[in-house]
Image 1 (tube, helix red, strand yellow):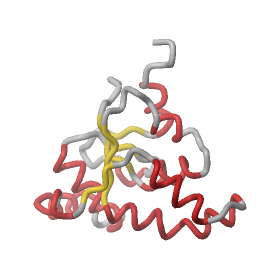
Image 2 (image 1 turned 120 degrees about the vertical axis):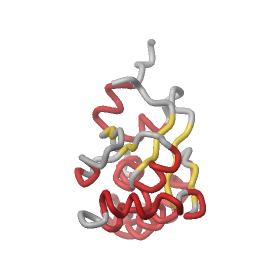
Image 3 (image 1 turned 180 degrees about the vertical axis):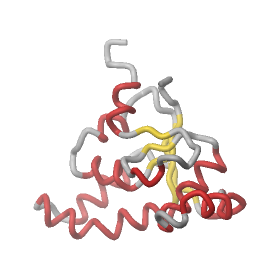
Length: 141
């Protein structure tokens, strides 16, 4: 699969990056020009911060600061509102919480970075963290 230069990012790679997981490498890849998500998705991530902070024994404020440092463009519903009905049709029954993110993918036409299998079969290009890291050029390239 051709490496992307722009991606829509789901909550799970963001959370992985906050925990120091493999996703963090992709966030700082120079070949990725834009990483975007929805305000709804950011709300999901923010709701997990207290639990994540306890899990890794750090202050919640540190996770919030790390989140703010991630190179993410956060889009409000006005950017993808016209794609909500189509996104709801494609994924609403499987996971209504994924409708906003899929609508942003449809509106911007970027591939999606998610480890959530609910997006399979929605007709969009999907990268898992593993497939994304494999597609990105190595440092020596």
